[in-house]
Length: 251
Image 1 (cartoon, rainbow, N blue to C red):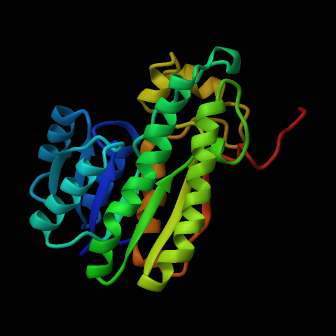
Image 2: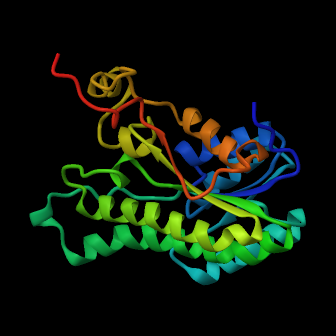
């Protein structure tokens, strides 16, 4: 089990779903966590449940000033910042011929610009801390296409590419940057589309592991990438898709 003792980790989109699971698991493993979301009341509840090792900060990831304030408050509260999980995202699934420029840019603003701003905002604090680790949540949609996902795929491919470029530049400062690529995960993004419980598992029954993932399964991989156990991993994609991208069966 990867220890996060001594780490201070900021997680975006942490009021619910995968981000919440990450924040809770990181705290269990010894980290101090910053629970960031535009859903501030929900983020406050998550932080309160975690206890003294957590702090909730309202954050619109598309706003560079909000990022600066969040980083400053993190360092003021916990003394340093060593980890970042760029988790916040929206789906914006819509057929290509119905997708407007505004629809497209709404997805890009959160999923792509938000990741860029997050990485940019934490670099100086991580340098001051002697290094750090960034985990950018991409998707299997950052590895291949999906129906209705022109904007979403564009954003997640961008996250994958930015991760590699940033890793090349930041390695000299002992800052590692990796991307995590989930497949189907049982979060609000899925349940709000009507896929709950057994229905979700049925939809994902064709993947090699035969089910949808739980948020904590993504959190455990993120914890590894933030920990010293992954000290020689940077600029890489880490898949957690139940084997979805391994291939397909005709059976």
